[in-house]
Amino acid sequence: MRISILTLFPEMFDGFINTSIIARAIKQEKVTIECINIRDFTLDKHNHVDDTPFGGGRGMVMMCQPVLDALQSVRTSDSKVYLLAAAGETFNQKKARSFVNVKHLILICGHYEGLDARIYDEVDGLISIGDYILTGGELASMIIADAVIRLLEGVIVEESHLDESFENGLLEYPHYTKPVEYNGKKVPDVLLSGHHENIRKYRLKESLRNTYINRPDLLSNREYTKEEYKLLDEIKDEIKSKGE
Image (cartoon, rainbow, N blue to C red):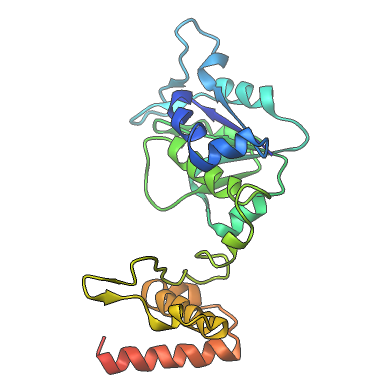
C-alpha cells in the first residue's frame, strides 16, 4: 500500500513514520508513506499557499493551485483521494477496513480558515475524525493512516484484531495480567480457570456490558444473537439491582 500525505508541515510526520508499528510496517514493505510539501508547488517567490477570501471575511484560505498541482504530482489511476474536512464522513473502524484494499491512498491536510472550494471538486471524498476543530489536518491524517496500516496483512497478528473495540460492533472486554491480586483487587476467577467456553462467555458479557454502559448508541441497530440477548438482560438486571 502507498499513502501520500499532502501537507504544509511534513516535519510533523517524522516521529510518526519512524516509530513503533508504523516504522516496522515500512521496513517490512507493507506500506510506503510519502509526505508531499504543498509549498513546493507554489508559483511565487515567497511560497505563499494562502490568500484572503473573495467576498471578504476573516482568516486566510488555501489556494487551489498549489494544492491541486501537488495532487497531480502523485495521483494515478489507482489513487483514492480524501480531503480532511469538518464536513466529511466521520472516520470509524468500518471505514478503516474499506481503505485496506486501496492501492494508493492520498490524504490532503487543510489549514487556515479553509480551502478553495475548487479543491473539493478534485477529491473522491471528505473525511473527518470528529466534531471538533484542529489547527490542521496533519494529526487527523496520522490517525487515519495508523488505523489503516495496522490492519494490513502481516503488520499485526490477525487474531489480535478479532476482539478489538468496534471490530464486532462492541467495545472490548477488560484485560488483566500479573499479578493475580494487587491492592486487594483480584483477577476474575473465570480467567484463571482454563475453561475456554466460560472465558468466552465472560468476555462476551463484559464486552456487552462495557458497550451498554459507555456507548449504548452502538447497540441501537445491532442484530443480537440469542446468547447476546440473554446476557444483555442479565447485565440490565445486575445494574438495576445495584441501583446504578
